[in-house]
Length: 50
Image 1: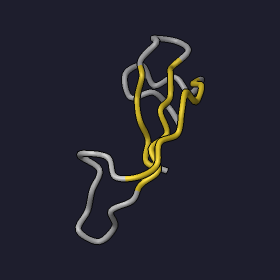
Image 2 (image 1 turned 90 degrees about the vertical axis):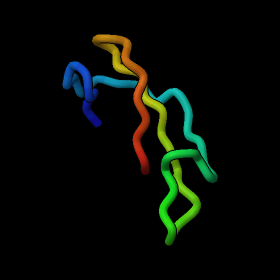
Image 3 (image 1 turned 60 degrees about the horizontal axis):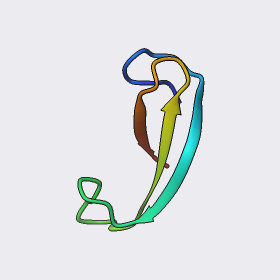
Image 4 (image 1 turned 30 degrees about the vertical axis):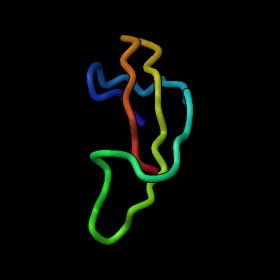
């Protein structure tokens, strides 16, 4: 998983959230796993649907 800001692929997993998250819903599936990553290069925090 690369950072969307600096494109570095070195990131650490901060936490994993499961359940309904605002902005990540579809009409078919209401449960997602969201991985929260921290980029080691530019310190950007970004989420990824897993």
